[in-house]
Length: 117
Image (cartoon, rainbow, N blue to C red; front, side, top):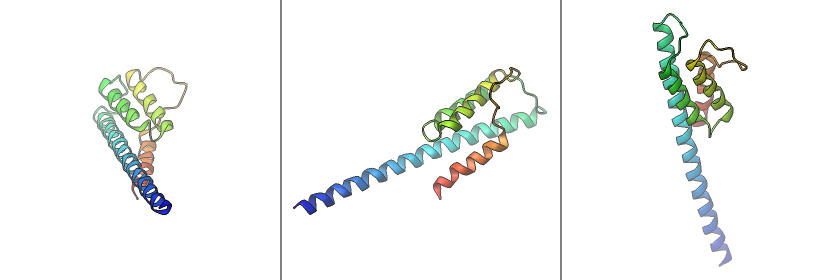
């Protein structure tokens, strides 16, 4: 009887781990989508405005959402995305930390995408 209980318990653990992994994949997918959306909006904005850095609430909101979606899977990246959000509110203020560049965000997206391989 003990072996049967152990097998049932092991099955329960495997099911819980499977659900956890699926939720982690969903969170990662949500983060990738939010980051890509913010990246695309920023790229289009800079291309259409000759690279001018003027305050832009929409871009700040996009980067803030990307940070929120990323926080649970990569807190360091989320902090950098939050800094990017603050940048777009006041782009001309001096910064204590360097703001992540769009090409570096592309690298981070590729790293997150590898979680699906």
